[in-house]
Length: 117
Image 1 (cartoon, helix red, strand yellow):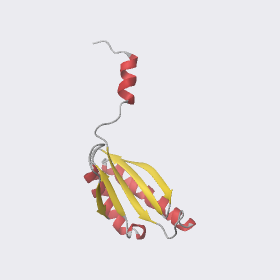
Image 2 (cartoon, helix red, strand yellow):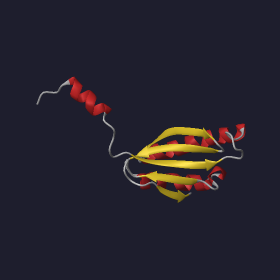
Image 3 (cartoon, rainbow, N blue to C red):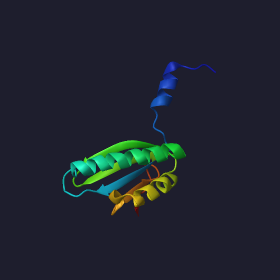
Image 4 (tube, rainbow, N blue to C red):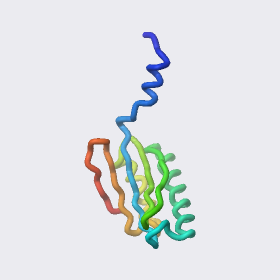
């Protein structure tokens, strides 16, 4: 079989149909971007969650979004339920996890599932 560089480029740019997402919604103390201390604590929590997700091999941390009185942490992997199972105990142990919710997206066409942390 002959491999064409264009074929490989197309394969690399094709979306991962198996990727599932978990979005963790954390409430902040104000309607903006939280306090400076909260942002520092959020970064520390995100680092802890990222390490746990990578160590368990269930996915990756895709970043965060701050604003409107909340922080959303984005995670992706092949199985949203397994990803959430790794995240949930750490979120429950953190004061930032109080009142948090998670949105599990099992695929582009699937309805999101909302869970309390």
